[in-house]
Amino acid sequence: MNLNIEKKQIDLINESICVYKTCNHCIDLHKKGQLSFSEVGEFVDDRGKSCLYRLKQMCHELFRNTVEAAYKEKFYDIAVGYIFHEAMKLRECIYQLEYYKPEYHTLVTSSELTPGERKLIHEFDILISKAQKRLAEGLKEVKVLLNELMAHVKDLIKIYRNNYLLPRFILENERSFISIYGKKGYQDLLNEIYEEGRATLMFKAAVSYLDSEYFQISRGLFHKVVNLDRDNVPAKFLFLYASCYNCYFRNRFSMSKIFAEEALAMPIDGHEEIQKYAESLRALLSDVEKEMKKTGQREEEKGSAYL
Image (cartoon, rainbow, N blue to C red):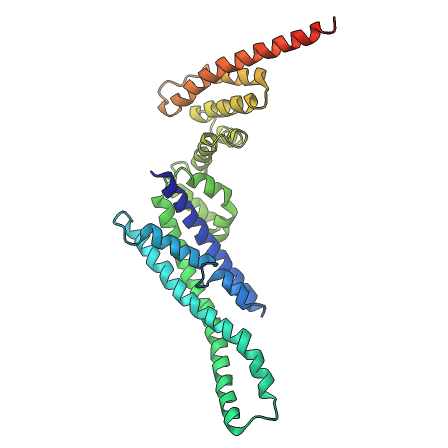
């Protein structure tokens, strides 16, 4: 798959989580009587600065006017668009309340009001009350819609299960997923997309980190997988592989050699998925031995200098 598309898929899921969190933040502020137009602007606007606007545009770019988009992706696009337009109504309500309500309170006590102006003030009073009611009800409706939307995020995650960036993203955002779906819901999701649930998630995330040359992080994850399953040959081999490279780039050549030799001594026949790493390790081992000789020569020369 195109790497750019894979990145955009992850960005879409990430922005969806951001929309969910920001909406909940707005609801909490409203309950405290602290919701402002600027806070709502973080959630929704028509100028491209809000998370919901960004999500809407992402959906349009990825799913609209393309035959490659799956049914659930097109459905998601429609759902996000609908939520956006509903949320924009909330923005109008909070604008009325924040900018017109204070002016209304100033005018309503004025002794200079004419009968016609008093009648208009009465209409303002009705409109402000309606805006307050619409805002409260609208926030509840958008919250319900977003809860439904997050259920559909699961469908997208299932579609993107082979995206090599997905395991890393899920692992890095576990707290967010648990806060949205609960521990059981999160575990059920992992069991649906990965054969061994969280163990597979960690393994795939570790491979992703490894391929991006984050050796320290990947070896830590491989170590956790091995602790869960001592018979997992690929995980054990890749733990040694990552450890070897981690030591190599830290100039710990002796340890790097130990890890490389232990890995290459493992029975990895039949594990095609790690053969390319074995070839890389053999090439590195040669470099490690050369570096060790250089280091030995430098130490010998250093010692001779004191004779």
